[in-house]
Length: 299
Length: 302
Image (cartoon, rainbow over all chains, first blue to last red; front, side, top):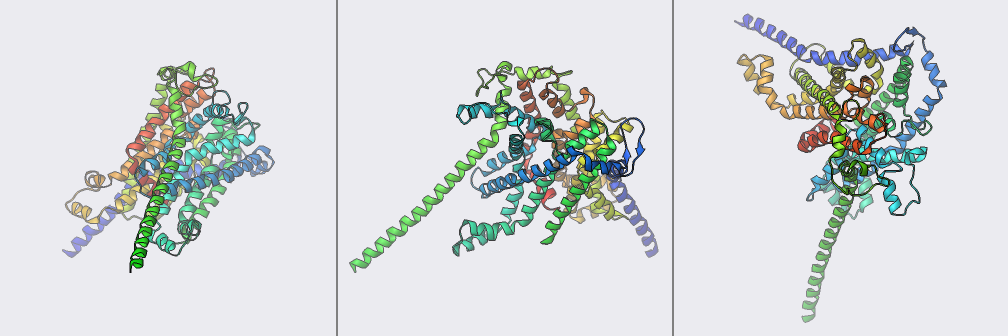
């Protein structure tokens, strides 16, 4: 009886193992084919001269050494970092202000939270199409409002000059993404017990003391997460530049992903594009590593 | 005696007024908060509202320089124009986007449910390794492996097909989907399954008949994200679809913006923007709770 049971048990365990493997097999197959293989191929391709059609040739590190000489590539790196540095603070600050405004469950607060979050579910491509039209010098509403309020004397070419192009694109991206940061920070704010603030008030602490001694330290994890997700998103940005400025004026708004896109899918220098992708990958892995480090620390 | 009484009364009056002052101040602050909230809300809604207002102007008015604030006449002409725009009209592109989204949603649900169940409830060799492998996809965004993906998709003749695009979208929904579904299955008490297993129920029918109902909220969340992400995605669609007939909605709208069909028709473009916004906004508004669950489960706890 016992041995019979053991045999049945063993085969049952084995069957369970097999079933489990079968359940995860489709996912593993997808990830292997569409993720692991392309990842390895990116490395492989980066050592080759790889046009879309025709002969491909092994070129060793030639693509990588070309990177150093590619002035537009260096310009794109510089632009992407500048953009990231400029777009992150307003997203974070406004996100924090909004999160503080909607923190308490006063009446109708759900409606406000929803409104601030709405642009997040709109695609960045479509929101860029909306903004490029609002920013137009002839039929755009911003110029109309500025002219009607006598704040400018003639219509502004917002997207026609590098500085203003950067600023208005940042404005559009803040609108589109700040709701996401708001929700993350709201979760952080709501995790702080009210008693802490109450006892601080009894001790006579003002707004800024509470902010710097209670709020910010206690929501460090959420702040770190919001910052890193926003930084990663900015490093990978493409849609807004492709749609709103097409990289202009004078190639001043070409991000890294945009330059990879141009090389790989306009000039079809896919080996070279792969080498750039590897560098981008390195940057992202470093950022994600930083994310895990910051998030793990406190546990 | 009288003096004391007087003092007491004074103090009472004082206290009362202080309480009143405090209450008044609280009310004023609350009112101020609402005022600020309303101003922000109007600013946030403005672009969407402005796009909508312009989409219902007459085409000529939508192109007016300078623009008018309110439509002189409400008209659906821009939407009508959109239906014949470009080579094949907007309907085909809406269909393309919808089909890609549908395949992505179906594929993500099936794979995430099966995989999530497998990772949550079974023990098999290499389980942890495979789980980490799937989640590691989160760390490396698809932008950095687009080139070989394109080369591969061309090799098997799936470029320019909606199916090929959907396969790529499914893959990038998987880490989130697997993570979420695994957690959903882990939250179901073991006892429920054990009794069914002892009754001789097979694993697949157990999943289908019993478990699926219990993890339905997770499935809904996976579906919402798969839909919104694939409906909105731009870069991969731009690269993989080289034939205009197969353009998804956002890529098609970009061709209007660049005036590939003649002068830029801003009225039709805004009609297109509204058509593109409505599905994801509608789904979000209807199923907000599930969306937020996903955000908190996926972003905060991983």
